[in-house]
Image 1 (cartoon, rainbow, N blue to C red):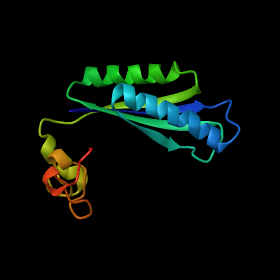
Image 2: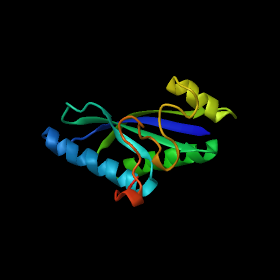
Image 3: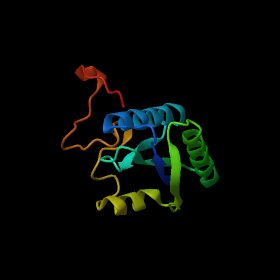
Length: 141
């Protein structure tokens, strides 16, 4: 498994308020999520009017693929012309053959513990019980 992460710094020259900057950042984030189906969010400078840092993460089974995806995402964001690129930092992390053991090590618990896996992945079993269609609740992700 490979994880590509990037921190992208931008200047938002036309923003004259936090609200105006948030509008630009939201557009960049929403367009990136819709096109690439990746994890993306503002990660720094939330209190500055004309600066932002956007974090992006891509996960896949092929290192070349995640590297290519990250390059495409950075090019896509730059080509939106909503903000001026200031800098970027990226890294590709390779996880070994025994991913389940490594995941358990990272979570500080036994593999498969801590969070429910499967269709209800990333839900804490203590706080967010799984919802099933037969219970009348819909699970949208």
